[in-house]
Structure formats: structure tokens, C-alpha cells
Image (cartoon, rainbow, N blue to C red; front, side, top):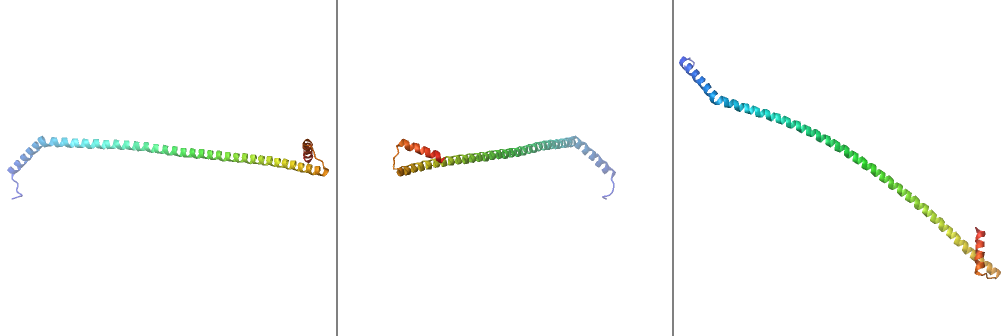
Length: 160
């Protein structure tokens, strides 16, 4: 019974199916197609927007990398310049210290020579005075201060 064909039932089934398709086409098919088209358009625009955003992000990343590379180069240049400048300053300070030390040595030698000459002169004068006093005592004669000074100068001149 189940597998038997009934022509009347078959005709009504086809008519009912066609009526349902016509009703669905009029009522539901267009809104469903419109909704599917809208969804397809939205997905397409989202994909295009995502692609544009990715391209913009890639460009921004490239710019940032370029700027970072430039900043690194500038940092290296700044460090190299600072090292060079520090080396120059160090060399200048060392040279100035050497020059100052040399001046101090020359001045000290000059002062030592001057003091030595003063000491030699003072010793000569003392020696001359002692010699005059000794000679005066030997001669038993006292000299006047002018004669005494003249005798000292003469003795110093002979010693030189």
C-alpha cells in the first residue's frame, strides 16, 4: 500500500508543491535573496576594508622601520661625534697639563739658579768681610767704612 501510485494524489501533491513554490517565491524568496546579497556585499566590503587596513599598516610599519633605522644611524653618529669630541678635549687637557708642567719645571730651575747665585754672592760677600777683618787684624789697622766697601768690591772682583 505504501508503494502504490495514486494518480489523483500525485496531481494534488504536484499542484500543492507548485502553489507552495509560487507563494514562497512571492513572499520569502525575494527577501531571502536580498538578505543574502546584502550579506555578500557586507562581507566583500569588510574584506576590502581589511585589505586596505593591512596595506596601511604595512606602509606605516615600513615608515616606522625607516625612521627607526634613521634614528639608529643618528644615534651612532652622535655617539661617534661625542667620542671624537671627548678625545679632542682629553688631548687638549693632556697637552695643557704637559705645557703647564714644563713651565713649572722651567720656572723652578730659574728660581733655583737665582737662589744659587744669591747664595754664592752672599757667601762671597761674607768671605770678603771675613778676609778684610782678618787682614785688618793682621795689619792692626782699622779701615774706614768706605775703604772697607772698596776692599770688599775689589776682593769680590778678584774672586769672580
